[in-house]
Length: 69
Image (cartoon, rainbow, N blue to C red; front, side):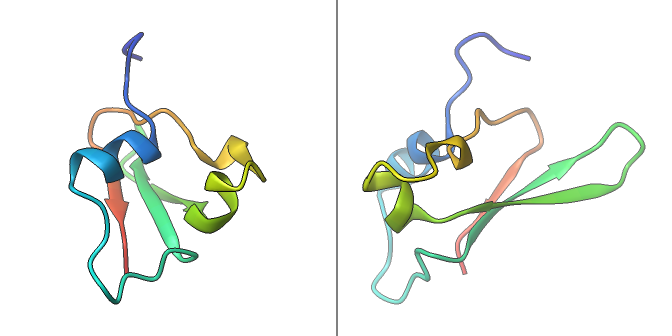
């Protein structure tokens, strides 16, 4: 893992924030496992910016995809 890898919040900020209809409570990270399977890591933006469940703000790994429905 990269020492200074960005978090989910960093990625959202780098992407320029949200569009009007983004579902900020339904964001997730798709992470590719070594065996090719994927896991879905939930991320509730509204909770994280209020200081709740900050553990959701995981450090991103190569090949992670942040999905904002």
